[in-house]
Image (cartoon, rainbow, N blue to C red; front, side, top):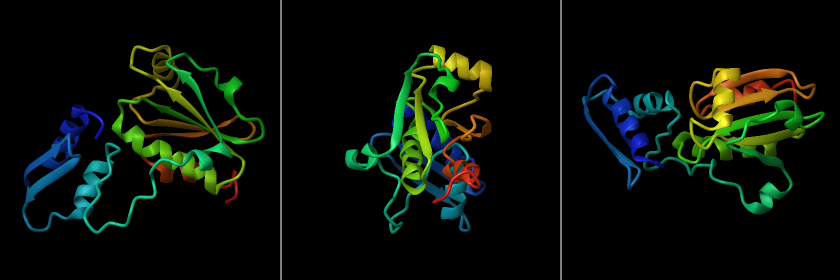
Length: 190
């Protein structure tokens, strides 16, 4: 959790699961508790949270492989931050001959902190892919206004994927790296 609003949102999502009597997500610890009827399980909790880009981790889960890459790992990858709130010329930022992923994010967006490292890891697995990071900063920035107007950005994280020829392959709203990876299929090889 990166903000109290995220904790409140996650609490609401958990409380909305049929059979849940009470739910609470603590911002400071990033931990949640759920009081529910029998039959409400980890899959229900994961599903409810993933709809808004959050991830549930339970004791005994395998360690997450979605943490930030080391500087050494990032050094050989084509990753650039191209905006800190400024409008972006997509055509000027496309990596010629590569699939280019544009990651629209904000530092205050909890799901963005989960998705960005996963996108970076895609670059480690697939050749010929570039990542362009667009920090919208806040909803009043030129980058946010541009994305809202031109792309109908409805929420963060938001990803647009362009093919090696510059054509739009698709867009993904939320923390759904598997949907981004599906857009890469047929365009690049692992």
